[in-house]
Length: 203
Image 1 (cartoon, rainbow, N blue to C red):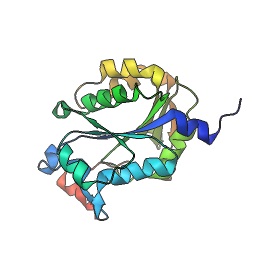
Image 2 (tube, rainbow, N blue to C red):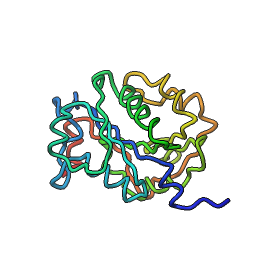
Image 3 (cartoon, rainbow, N blue to C red):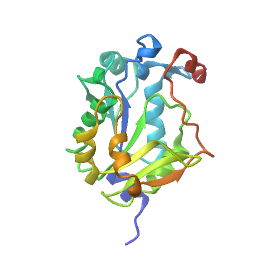
């Protein structure tokens, strides 16, 4: 049976990891970094919607109350991660746990601090989804990067190994042969906003 865009949109939920406190940015919460006059977290949500995700969950941590007040995140499910200081792994676990209760069959994961990745790259990864066993990653000149898509069959294993700031890296390394890479270097730049010098990307 041929899959349709509506099938994919209904089964794949977007998941934004936006809890980081920006230690190397002087403690500036990444979700609230300014980008074209609005908080950066808004941009990531809009990118997921533009790429075809109709459902988006956003994991919050640092300055979560301020993010709720300042960012326009209507229609999103906001997930609090009280353990955000433990690193990205805790946010990934919190996000997957929230999706477990929604009936989603896959999670398309974007990081809040990669404004060089837009709808075209996200849509390519989304289009590679097949079923709950899918394991898909964007690639840049053959090197695995973000966004990534995890079918629900992988969520327990990812949650069990997601610790510190490594996120799903250990799980992906262990399942490298099963990852479908989708080349995106022609439509996106996968830089991170980690240091004060990186803030020039937001100007």
